[in-house]
Amino acid sequence: MGDPGSIPGSFAYLTVKDRSPQILTKAIDTLHRHKSEFFEKHGEKGLEAEKKAISLLSKLRNELQTDKPIVPLVEKFVDTDIWNQYLEYQQSLLNESDGKPRWFLSPWLFVECYMYRRIHEAIIQSPPIDDFDIFKELKDQNFFESQESVIALCTHLQELRKTIEDLDENQLKNEFFKILQISLWGNKCDLSLSGGEHISQKTNIMNSLEDLKPFILVNDMDRLWSLLSNYKKTREKESVTRVDIVLDNSGFELITDLVLAEFLLSSKLATKIHFYGKTIPWFVSDTTLHDFNWIIKQLKHSNNKWVSQCGVDWEDHIKTGRWVYLDHIFWTLPHDFSTMSQVAPDLHAALQKAHLIFFKGDLNYRKLTGDRRWEFTIPFHEALSGFHPAPLCSIRTLKAEVQVGLQPGQGEQLTASEPNWLTTGKYGVFQFDGPL
Ligand code: F6P
Ligand code: MG
Image 1 (cartoon, rainbow, N blue to C red):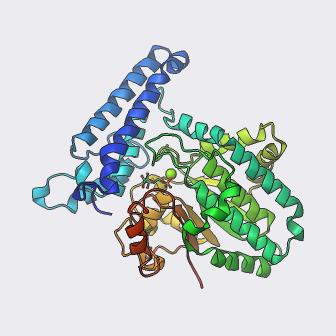
Image 2: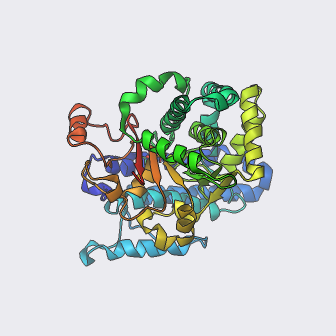
Image 3: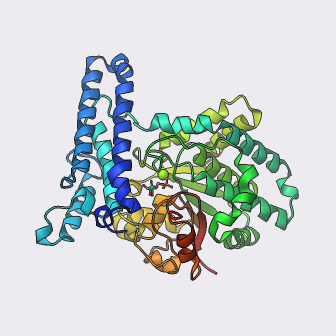
């Protein structure tokens, strides 16, 4: 994508200039609002910690706004060395006259990831509030505000499960496509795009699927169906079909992903699901283990019987090992996925055992494609630059200026009619890479 400063007015530039400081200001505000909670929990030490975290975040905001050099991480954490090596690598890409990597003169993907990692550093440097998730409130709010859609979705799912065995091939395929589209549009509910303002799913998404179809720019749903239905037909009795879902946002989007996972099991298109989440709070709304468990518990205790049924079933899937939640530091590093086999060979080897991998969301798409300004028509396979652990599919609404695999002229036509089509989250893709 290049560095934010090189193209003033680009989305990358506006992110670093406006959106990132806004996110930091909101984070500072959140700490302020939790002051009494910290005091109740930890007494004076809690207050001191709050002050320290706020001053570290203010310093970070100032560094960003005044385009200071990007400094190494200081607090020892599992990934500190890898981050600092990456920073050295960024330095090595510069000419001597350029000096140090700076906020506006480093690749956007790196700068954005670095900001979230520094937010985490500010928190872990401030014990005893070092396990505080500064974005938790926003994520939870997104879930509560999406209740109507959550109820509609869980009801649909539970009703569907009653008759799923009786559906013919075509009916099952149509249901699969519906559930996939719900998961796609669920990705609009990312809270980083709005600078941390709420974006929730207030209306029942199920009623909008037909109207939203024209906004799917690449639609490989048929290929997903062929792959999974073929596994189902040819699977021997005790053998496993594993689908991995690299999660994105918590709140409503996570519900849509869990619904997809349940559908895959109920329809026998898969027999096991691995979910991957983030080890630290990330890009405001990304899912951590705590969010994952919290949401399932919320569902379980809902007054709505279908919603609570989902919670009960899903807890059971976790207990029985049909659903497995995993995290790995690689997902919160700045590296693109083409480097995974060297940087995180264990994770790469784990993904190789999947029969299909879904990558949810925009940030994953940027990391899949190396966040480069590819020609719109370059094949997805090529943009993956050698990352092919297993058949994979990106399910993503467009929020950044990278898109590949379009038809000739498609991108240009969109640019002419809607100059911001790449960044508003209005368009989406199901983009598959795997056997034909
Ligand atoms: O592109 C805008 C942006 O906020 C990026 O910062 C980030 O790539 C993305 O959107 C987050 O979206 P998602 O939650 O879909 O990964
Ligand atoms: Mg996200």
